[in-house]
Image (tube, rainbow, N blue to C red; front, side):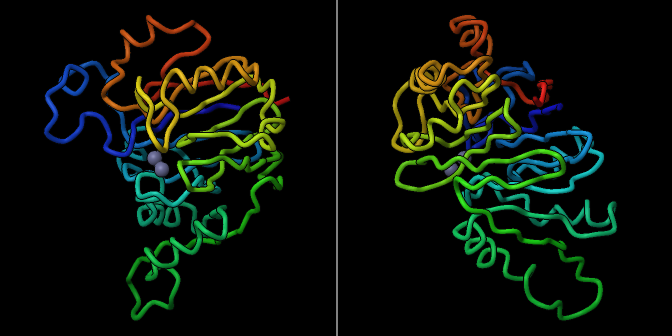
Length: 259
Ligand SMILES: [Zn+2]
Ligand SMILES: [Zn+2]
C-alpha cells in the first residue's frame, strides 16, 4: 500500500499569510505545507483521508489517477474545504464518489454544501455527485480489500475519528487526547501518522512532545508528524528528533505492508 502526503500543514497552511518567520520565508519545498490530507493507493481501492481546502492544488500537483472514496476525520474547514472540487473526479470517473463520515460530519456537510444535496435547478450546474456512507466510531468497515477502523479520539472538546487502515497503518490528525478505550485499536501499530502542531501545548492538538510521547506509549513503529505550524522548521526539527519519528513533508511517499 502506497501513501502520498498531499498536505502536512496546519489550518493556515505554510507559509502563513503575512508571516515573515524563517519557516514561512524558506524556499525549501519541505517547509511549504498545504492543508493536511493523504492519498492511499491499494490494488483494490484508491482513496483520500480528508478533502482539504487545498484539494484542487493537490490534485493538480500529485495527479491522483482516481479517487474511489474519501474518508473524513472531522468537519473543520481545513479538512473538508475542497469538497466542491471533487466533481473533477466525477467527470473523469463518470460516477459518484463514496464519502465516509460520522453523522456529525454529515450534518455539517449537508448544511455547508446544501446545494450538493438538493435537486439541481437547471442543467449544467456541475454539482459534485457524492454517496454519503455513515460510519460509527469504533466500528470497522470495508473499503476494497482493506478493513478501515474509525478510531475515536478527542480534538479539544470535539469527538472526532482517526483511522486505522488495515492492520499496519494509522492516521490520527487533529488529536489532543486518545481515550483509554481507543488505545487497543492502535497499540503496537507499525506505521503511524499523528498530528503534532507546534513545540508548545495547545487546547485542541497534540504538541510535538505530546505526539512523540503518545507514539512511544503505544509502541508505534515508524512515526511521522503532520498538521504542522511554522513554529517547526523542517530540517532543524527533524535533526532534533529520533530517526524513527520525523516530521512529514508534502509529497512524501510512504510504502507500507498491509498485513
Ligand atoms: Zn485541522
Ligand atoms: Zn480540526
